[in-house]
Image (cartoon, rainbow, N blue to C red; front, side, top):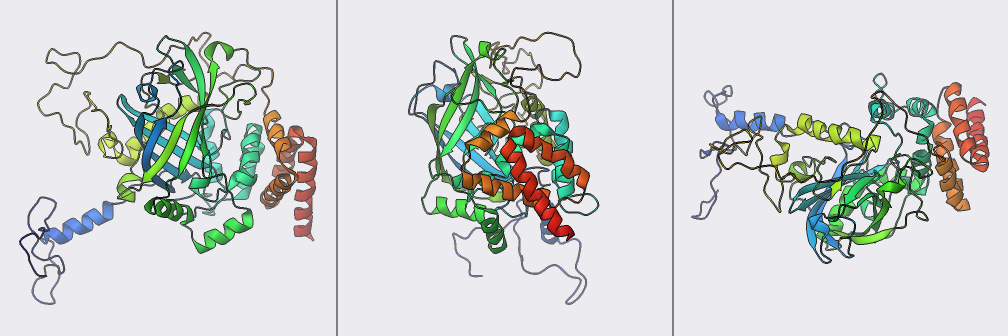
Amino acid sequence: MPETSTAKILTTESGAPVADNQNSAQAGIGGPVLIQDQQLIEKLARFNRERIPERVVHARGSGAYGYFEVTDDVTPYTRANFLNTVGKRTEVFLRFSTVAGNLGAGDAVRDPRGFALKFYTEEGNYDLVGNNTPVFFIKDPIKFPDFIHSQKRDPFTGVQEADNVWDYWSYSPESLHQITWLFGDRGIPASYRHMNGYGSHTYQWVAADGAAYWVKYHFKTNQGVRSLDAGQAAELVGQDADSHQRDLHQAIERGIFPSWTVHVQLMPVAEAADYRFNPFDLTKVWPHADYPLHKIGRLVLNRNPDNVFAEVEQAAFSPNNFVPGIGPSPDKMLQGRLFAYADAHRYRLGVNHTQLAVNAPRATTAQNYGRDGLGAANTAGRAKNYEPNSYDGPRQTDQALAAPTAVHGWTGTHAALAHAKDDDFFQAGELYRLMSDGEKERLIANLAGSIGSVGRDDVVERVLPFFHAADADYGRRLQAAVEAIRNADEA
């Protein structure tokens, strides 16, 4: 290659110049390759290690950078700094994903979509981990590993089994609300740009005067909700397994920046105890008639990552990353995720994953006494690694991020305190009754196709009564459709 005075010099990872990057060192012409060839060994060793383990859930993902802009005053409800001024912008990173599929799975599949958002605020990173549905399948984190195992590849057959999926759901009637979402028209988004996002969990906002509110987040797509039916999705997956990744990347590259209008629902803390159902139950929504949406801002994605592997795959979202004015709620699933998400990243990426560029604070600097470990970039030099100290090290603020929550009673494994409307079927029935005739027909067809493929009669007999309990018409039509499929298969 011709050399110029401005040409960059290729080096090894230790900085030494590389003389030949095309030919391995050999013991004579045609002889065996030498292990002393540093460039060869270094390249092969790095290549073997350049892909980290995929996520157990949400493995298949896409992401982009952008900003959140405050459009409406919310200072009466939270003292979070990044929300304190109309017009204020905060840089964000958003990762979309499917839940059950592996890293190389297709995008256009019937599956919830992850909607994980990192705000790079001046008070530290705030992570909001949600989905494209406002509810989830279960309400207690101790059930999460079993639920995911039932949805992913069977250890014997190596593929997802309808028998496992519905066998688990047949013992978990609380899943019915999310099942109705998943098998309805919004179960397969046409693209990541054409779906809503939700914080799903209940969180806490605390105002400067100490007033506390329970809050739910809603991200309404400004592109309009568009979805695929089962036939369209199957055709698209066959043509382009990367359809959603390609659509998001190409839209942003063309300057078509997707956006969402951001709303919240706010419940004064004192109202939670007497609400007609448990407001911290992840399988339920708060009806808008009770707690209307308040617009707070807009979310815009305007920059693609430079390196998908370094940024999208190494992006680590932890719902325990709060900022002053925002905190957790007694939502049991959220409480479990406060530990599980951060721990998953410590396993996949190492204890120093927060120092990676995509995860590190951008509007402030992390200052703490975390030291050493694999991949440590912030060694802090000669600074002391304990606190308190008399060497001018960082100190605590003595100001809580969120408001305290009153607790009482005995330790133990307790079921949630029952509220007047705490059943597993009512809201699934409400969702069904909101659907048009066409939406109901497609929901029934999608469910019947899945349940009809289950091999065991007892699983089918156990799950069908859930739909009858939600709505008589729902149950009757689904049972007839499932029986028609199973009778045809036996004929």
